[in-house]
Length: 147
Image 1: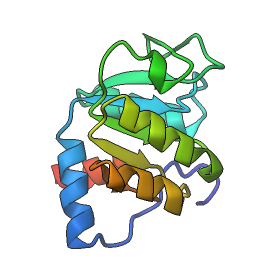
Image 2: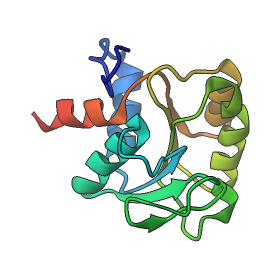
Image 3: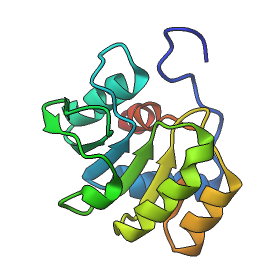
Image 4: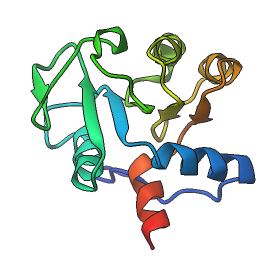
């Protein structure tokens, strides 16, 4: 990803990926793990876009009090409502634990942002019946489907 580029152009999705993305994009509540309160961060830009097109954003970041006008929680376990999708802006090594938390939170899908991927996170999510996407930008995929 080039500097300043929030989300690069995606590669073509397989049929299973397209279906999973479609189901997740049809959800309404997105818990964004790693959402920053800094407008210069990619997580803020993507979260702001998703909020602007009608998704309810639940910020998950123990280092923020508030992001995008919503109170931040420190972990998925602290959420007061069930997210449809957990969107992850954390380094890949943290994703297996996040996948376990997404399952426990009752999410229907786990979406790892561009550059984030982990075989164990994928296994945990898929074994629990969650849709799973990795290394893709949710904002870019949403924009592509609007056209």
